[in-house]
Length: 630
Ligand SMILES: O=C(O)c1ccc(O)c(O)c1
Ligand SMILES: [Mg+2]
Image (cartoon, rainbow, N blue to C red; front, side, top):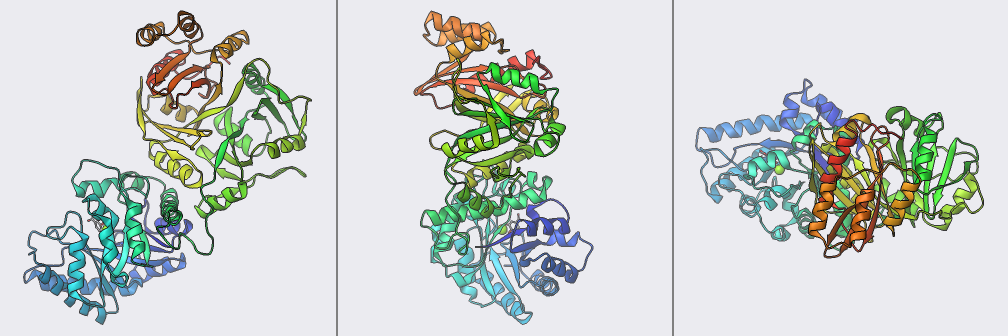
């Protein structure tokens, strides 16, 4: 697949944009005229910069209000075009985009437009360039690619082609299969953009809310499948007008863009709707099937380690052993593993220096780590191999939220052999002791609002994870957006939270933590009442929930008196839906804001969204600055 992106999609000046686009592996760039006009280098210099970056210019755009004009404006439009064709020759590109006219002077008529384009085609050919005609969704007379195609067909000129743009077609609800009957040699280039469903006029919707493929609600995959059906082999070029992307990191936007193209094309290939897929030379393995969380690694220092160990042991973990060569301890409980790292150098230490005691790495369990690594690389993710000592197994890892690491870990037995190799373990190191926490139910990561889409794309493109519709949760300091991403058997559930308000728990976390990170980990148990009693015996600090909440629970549900009494005593939250019941229990937060949750599911699949405002308000009241006692 040939990939390209428009300069308008990214922040920065032209040179920063080109660097980011090349680094993300695109083959070409659309030069938006304004990016060129605002840059103080000649067209020849810009052309050289593009080629030096290893890119070509797929398109120069836009050229507005050309067709259907009366004289003298018509002649002036041709003169304007001639000058742009000169610029194109200096830039070193042969294709310009003519978007359908919005001029009040323009006159309609398919044949008039076709005549204008035919004559422009003559001029273009004489100057060694081509023109492509695009229907803007808000064009005055032409706002449907079928009409644009009819104009190009009647122009019948070798230097005049059609430009398709998924936004304009899909925003107007036009069936993309109508593309299948357009001959591929008449398609000059294909522009791609998704967008969330919004009740807005097409122009405002297009200029502010376009998004990468899969980040919106438009049928972009169906659109691409129709283009593939024509046999088109040219560029797929992202043209994303988005206010957040214009303000965000150009590098990240470029990576996300290329990832979204590869991800979409890979899906089409898997569904048999595209023949070639993203790369014929290097086929992508399927989305890596995950089987849960293999381990959690905390970074801390010698002074804070005892408090963290006390907390972890209080949760029923046992000290399993020491690392053979490092200041690293392993704690185990059944199949759960927690690593406490207090090395004074390396990645964990960097995390500690920046964030304080923090969850610095997550091991994701999977059957085939090699395939996951290949897929991640194919989707523009960096795979790192943190250094290990002699004889220890080196695991591949991806850079995760806030610089944490996501290790790709072989599941099951193989993993335990590795613990045995790297650690000096006590006999019987992985048994349960009283409390029975069984697995990680979910992990919550707090990110910046503008990064939610980016992380969602990261997780769902590389792994077998699918996002659920986002929800908004009320925090006393404002609204928090919450997005759940999970695999089919829900053995891995990741919650991404973000808020625009500066006063929510999410915002406080990002401030205190000095950036995004893992905010809480929820363990699942099959007996929350027994677990709560044991935690209390262990002196664990449980979050106390207001009695008003329980009075309401009593009114809503017919819970047995003794169950109600236990919920009240331990601060357990409860929810129920058609599928089952859910129990949740929270521990007080660590300095920096991280906390543990414990849940019991009886058939319930959600995350207790109805309880979140109660919990957030309680946490805000108990620890206004998230400062805890542990
Ligand atoms: O918003 C616009 O004007 C505009 C310009 C050029 C395009 O290719 C496009 O899709 C939209
Ligand atoms: Mg366009």
